[in-house]
Length: 284
Length: 296
Image (cartoon, each protein chain N blue to C red):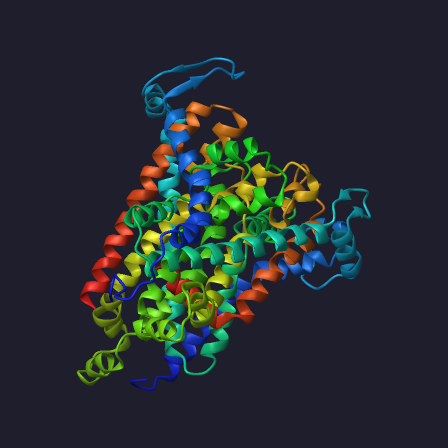
């Protein structure tokens, strides 16, 4: 620091603590609500201390079944499984097809290469929200409604990862290709034994970003799935709302919200270094 | 950086096999639907889908004359400006503070970035719960202060609710970029200004803030894109576009007209309008990135 100023230092900490509190409060409240019974929550104001029915609420939410006040909820554990499978397929699928096409674009010369490059580039621009109906129609014509393929494959089409890997491959020294050639390695051998291991950091960074992207999908599953057994958890929450805010079983909804937050939050905190790198890189 | 490799592999079929999966997906799920959108936008279908006729630009004329659509544009503009302004201001304040403190910077950073992982739909539910008129704790406190909060009836309250939820979720993203920007400012500049007698407040506005302007501009575009396209889930969980159409932003309107009102031609025309907006924003963003690469 340039100068010492205890007053400013104290003020900074106050601002930061306030920021952290405001950011954390909604989640704290959600957690508290998930430990109370639905009667305790509708007592206005609800208590800000943890309640006693945490285990019961989470049990009902996870396995599904009939709640203490007679409502029926479907199993959140199953929804989380659907979310996990979709998020993994989306993240790994994006990374795999992007590695392959970036390899082709950088290390080969073939007719229409520029056209292919621009075709991929254009997909970068238009988010799925904007072309939702025709895409829905294609998926429904292909009979992919209510399937994992329908939930994931259309979202694997994205250019960000291809560009990230292309940029990275361009910085890989040509000497490595020459060395591999002298050693008699073919293109796929070079790809597998040299390029992919060198890209490990970029792959980890992209994985974090794309996993969160996949897990947090909402509009697409909302259209794609009509069968309860194919609801991902983020979208399943919406289906738990009944009529009016006093009639909702807030404790179960809040437990589901907490459960839906845990996996992506864990991924961000555990892989923080790659997460920051992934965010910064994928915007370049 | 080289745009071309000097050394290449030779094969006539391998590159095609390598790009095949990517091409198959973008052709089927991107180019085909996009072409369909253009095609649909000049057609009109009756409610049962039995007859379809070519109507030229009629769908666009209908949108242009439709007061609801104009109102939705205005709603989206208000919403995205508020999300961008509040989101950027709060994030900048927090980033400057974290950059300043010596003790605890890592912990603060960790405690501030995790909302990025929260799904927009979940963010909507969380804020809805705090502000629910009958059970929400914040609406209870506001009532205690003599302020009757009801986002189910009051359009401004509903707008405030989705802005708060959207900002809450986006602050962590802005914060990370501002912090990276602050940390890349050479310390010598700040020290020189301090030696010349500039106090912290002055130093911020004359040195730090101007040097951050590329980051700020970049984040501004990203935040507008976010508010336009990625906040559907927040609106759908917190307000469902209501009361009336008070929080029906463009993407929500598109969803509503297509899936609830089943107006295919109209929603295809809306899709095209949105595509034009998003392409414009992306082009602006890329031109800026190009500039930054050149000047640095």
